[in-house]
Length: 113
Image 1 (cartoon, rainbow, N blue to C red):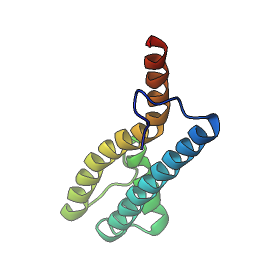
Image 2: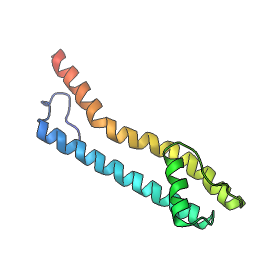
Image 3: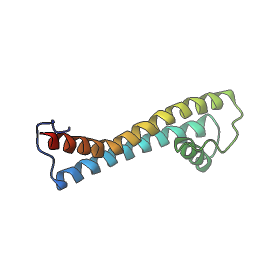
Image 4: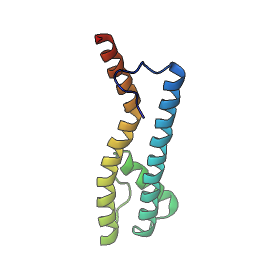
């Protein structure tokens, strides 16, 4: 997926395509995570679709829950979803930053030789 250290730096056009691919992948991971949260809050928390979307968005964004959950199943789901969301946030951020970090490091190593 990435060029080796001995290979030349990608052109700006190819780098832009790489960045776009990473953003699309990050968006798909975000959408999948949000979908899991919405379905879970709707089924376990018995919230309507809009409240489920709000709660899933707030948890996935790191802001915390909005509605109080009453059943044990809903609380267990919310706990698992919060842990998943923390890891998903790190993964999504990594997907977005990776092409830029790689390009900086690759350019740095090209300058050494």
